[in-house]
Length: 276
Image (cartoon, one colour):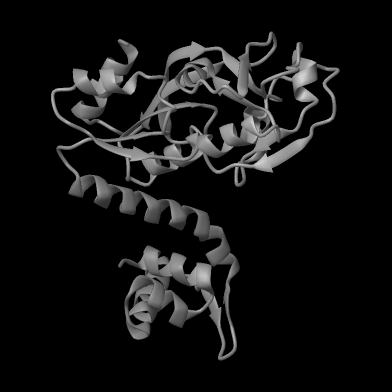
């Protein structure tokens, strides 16, 4: 534990005892680490009383940079422990069918990690759990280098029988929702990132936590959803009709990796992905 880790833990908890428990150290050890950081910086970071702990203006100003430093140190430790190996992040069924060929082209085996969303995959690259990711846009590209691997049409998944004939009719239906995603991803997942000017008001359908739940909701007539065409081909269902619609945005499969990476294994993965 360094002073920045101690500072961030106390800033999060605003309680030295809880922060010490979180870091697995004693409270005196934590207090000494924070005090040492304050001496080094020459400013107080916390106002302490017997009743409360609060950030000073100096502490508030330093907190974002301290979080960045702590995250970077944590990521560096993870990558150092994994030196000489490759951790690949992808969404289940979100690789466009390309991942087997990419992995077969590598000289060494890779560990596979799965993420629920593109944003989660990107976070796993930034925090050091993963080295490279193959995921569909959009996602938070902060701190990452990105190359597009391919684009493919998305299709609307509708309950069979009486399917909509236009994008506007599809958008009038309740759409599967994905809890926890931001407004940008929510619009994309519900086909409204490029909605026409005369699009009907949005109807939020029931939530799903994964593809299996989303497809079941469509089969039961509860909602529609939007999928890459390659995913639709892998999941034919008697109760689901898949259809392309003009105006629906493409699915863009991209390879992403930390901008600071100099790993030959990451470079080999990127070359293999772009060669598919």
